[in-house]
Amino acid sequence: MNAADTFRSRFNRSPAGVWSAPGRVNLIGEHTDYNGGYVLPFAIDLRTQAAVARRDDGRVRVLSVQRGGDAVEFAIEDLKPHAGSGWAGYAVGVVWALRDKGFDVDGLDIVLDGHVPNGAGLSSSAALECAVGLAALELSGIALPLEDLARIAQYAENEYVGVPCGLMDQMAVSVCRADHALFFDVRDDVREHEPFAPDDDGLAVLVINTRAQHAHAGGAYAERRKSCEAAAKQLGVAYLRDVARSELDAALRTLDDDVLRRRARHVITENDRVLTTVDLLRNGRLSEIGPLLTASHESLRDDFEVSAPELDTAVDAALASGALGARMTGGGFGGSAIALINTGDVDPVQRAVAAAFEREGFVAPQFLSPKASAGVVRES
Image (cartoon, rainbow, N blue to C red; front, side, top):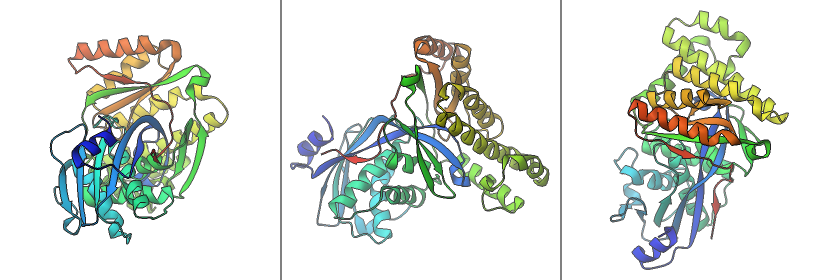
């Protein structure tokens, strides 16, 4: 059953509506958002639905189609950051965040039906947060720009769940347009929608879900962010984004620690790769971005050290079998890789990656060929 049918079956009433939000693929620009830099994600046509209705008793009840079992229920007044809400924390955390920001949001019944693979680095959590957030706002009669919804969803994930993520995921999930990628300058809060329809150029973006689970709440992600902040402080800038590519050598000489040098080198060069990619897209040269994707992966693997054996295997096998470029996408430590491929090479690349995984003894990967999709909406 879908979200609405499950809602009726389990809660014995109809939802007020169904809202949905997409997952996202980050084409390029990894670990740059919390450094004030540039990112280039696009929303995908895998979505999380939230069937929602109001309650007037100050309680939130959440049920997942995929998880089954009983609904979990919370009193709004008892919601506290890091209170061990489990998987439901991403939903109730948005309710907490809205109220903490001064919005008059009451209780809700929520049924979630997620089709964005969990742990795949495709922003399943941001999709959930933004779908629930838009539902809560609309059912409370509150009109809020989607970019502000994105910030509240990020606030919920940072402060309630405890994941120190940047703003890219929630912004992409909220404001992306179909057949476009989102060029987002995080420091200056500038967003531009760049045409992105690989099919029109005889190309495909293949997503390879390695099924190696990642967990951003773990210490490795937070450690990367702290290292970047420390490097920025030593360099006397607010963000590593404030260091231009032409200033890289001088910056590396200034830093007194090899780890900080490598973290900074990734961020500074990655920002430059995003700008080059955007320029190519604007000039109709999508097929030429492949080497930039591959260079991004090498930097994430060697300088930022957030790759994993499964991700490296996927990238190497895709490149060896004809991909124009390939990289890990998302925060890393598992999750997914992407490959830019000529449409006629999709099947050979998939076979090569699957064979490489089998040789390495990895779990068989999942292959997805998503289309660039629109952001969060009310469906019904």
